[in-house]
Amino acid sequence: MPPNPTLDQLQVLVAVAEAGSFSAAGRKLNRAQSVISYTIANLEAQLGLKLFEREGTREPRLTDVGRATLEDARRMVGVLQRMRSRVDGYHQGLEAEVALSVDAALPSPVLVRVLKAFEARFPTVMLRLHIGTLGLIPDHVVSGQADLGVGGLLGEVDVHLVRIGFMSIVLAAAPSHPLALLPKPVAIEDAREHIQLVVTDQSERTKGRDFGVFAYRTWRLTDVRTKHTLMREGLGWGGLPRWLIADDLASGRLVELDLEPFREVRSPLYAMHRADRSPKPAAAWMIDQFKRQLGCFNEFEPGQVPDEEPEIVRR
Image 1 (cartoon, rainbow, N blue to C red):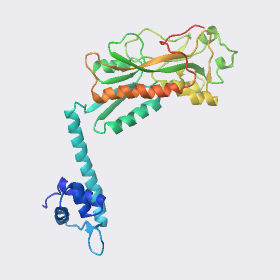
Image 2: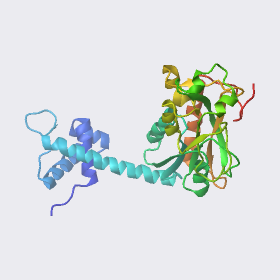
Image 3: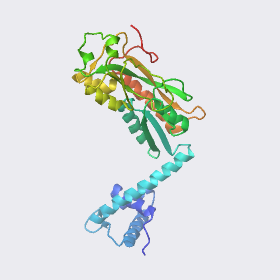
Image 4: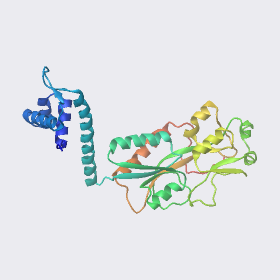
């Protein structure tokens, strides 16, 4: 069985292809041109293939099989570089993986921007992402299922909190819903008579407690996306993040409810980690990025109200 190519040979192949000549590759790798030529000749002999055309051309030119082999070589060299980067990261205290638990109500554009930046900044760190709601986020943090949680809070939690921004919650319904057809402001007595869609906490943290529930009849759901879909179909009214329904409000698929005596709520969002341990470098960086990205997002979010803790405010 012929010997396998070495990583050094593959690195030389990549260097020659990218530099355009044996001499340029030698300068790039700080080796003599004769060493580069010898390495490529040995690689061709081991493979039994001609990787470069040398006759009738001023500079070596990849053959068809040489181009295919080059792609394989680049992948192998890339794996080696990632391995080296990961080892360097371990020496610097960088975690191998970040487990992140995020509330489904967090603005999607913010999550996407943070994760894109994370991938670019920490290419060797793996990510485990869980999307949940309400009390599940701190539960994941406390149990160790998540290194970092991002979401709002209901009640007391035994985690370390970093306030990173806010989320505006508005009451809305489909334009055909009876509440949308009433004169504004809508009396609370009228709202109580129609089904309110409510996202239920799947954890035990708020068991037996309701927040922002006004109607006598409720439909209990486990996620905000389903609530959004049902509201657009006229199957109840309720509160949703403004960012999630901005297009619906602009197009008329949903309408804001001016419910007397309540108004839009600005609910704080937090990054959270266990109080008995500090976040490692990638998770700490992520906290700062969520704060930055939410700050930019909130700056341009329509319908802002003065900074305040989450509560129902009387007019």
